[in-house]
Image 1 (cartoon, rainbow, N blue to C red):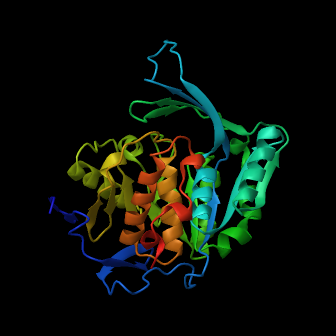
Image 2: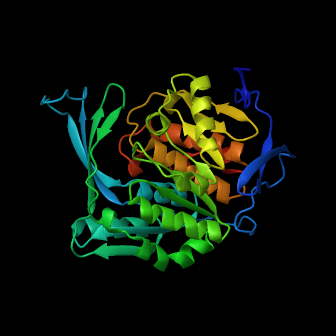
Length: 356
């Protein structure tokens, strides 16, 4: 056992007891349950053969440069290689869920340019429903120049959002059928916040489970974003920026997670990089360590986690089980370069990871 906090015990993955989430008044009360039971209730519907997920988020083209180290401010250094790929947090999470076998719809906006055309083709490649992939005639498809440090896999990113910034609450309203038909709706902060909130409100009114990933990091978030989130899922830097609290230790991360609960989140999952994830609920705190691997490129690892989490929850896994499985898939993704290109296919994963 790693220790105790006022909100409950922190368990290692080996020690962690089995808990099943039961949604009550939009907060999860955790009860011990038979591991064979399906614990998740999404939109009043049982888990289907293909879990149904709707992702509302950004679509970008990633422009990735690799170098032995990241440059200092004002410094120019030689790179070793360059590649282009598909990205954007919404697109990444949708592709990850689709690669696992999810029935995925994307709500996004691209420019009327070659990058937008290629983005649509990429969604089609994975069988993602693009009925609500809108086009902005007066803007460009989002781009994300990414710098990757080869020695560690760490990265720095600048995102030019372009058409993503024009995805509006009215667009989201048009996508209501996809949102209401889903078992899980996923949103991020790479869009205008009003747009993300509009999607979360529609999902909440329809009884659909919501995941809000407040990325990229900003310093202020209205209370409604917490209260509309069945699962609030920030990473380390986002947690520190939002709460003003450190997360250097598990106990510090737990305290920051409890602060997010106090602001209204139903459950909190903090992604902690190589340390894994921390699940914080009103009943318990559980540290789920990540597999130890050699990271080649951490770009998109958080999106691999969120997309996997949405898939496993829509498939009827318990919250703790979904977190553990998502951890493992994110660990696979960091062992290959690129963003979506690093996400594993089902055939590359152990069968027991996907089995009930």
